Image 1 (tube, helix red, strand yellow):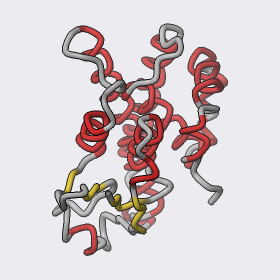
Image 2 (cartoon, rainbow, N blue to C red):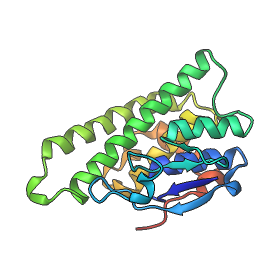
Image 3 (cartoon, rainbow, N blue to C red):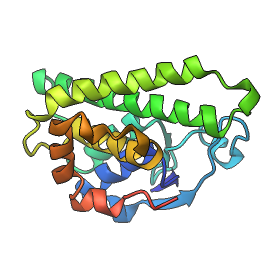
Image 4 (tube, rainbow, N blue to C red):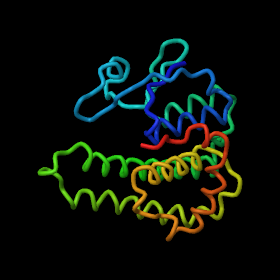
Length: 203
């Protein structure tokens, strides 16, 4: 398998953490990618019309995207364990993944606003709206974190990768100061081998 890879992407990291937890990471070749909303990477577009990472090329040549599809594929390939069987636990896990991905989406959009959009065209209200999504998502995580225990599934993986991205791009938010439950949980989860192996390198 091959994956169009960007070490800074929380969505790529989510897939690689899932692959590591499933014992599949050594089977995935990392292809360098330069996904960008303006200067689109045509090597990705050739397999994914949206030109986004992650995009996974399976052993039989099929292209899979986005991270939720890829993670479900990897879970099936690896024999399961990261996505519960249909029922309340599954819906909880999928909702948690959705909230966590929403935090990551908002963070990436806020990052684009300052890193990609020309300064004269930046819209502060837009950025404030994205940061409010992050704040509301963190409040939800704070309420859930005490119930996570030692769960390792697509919900908790997605939350951990979102927090890792905030640490990388938005350290000024200092989210740990106001979210002690989430901070305590992330201290443990962030030390897992899968998280350490996929840690975003310093900028």
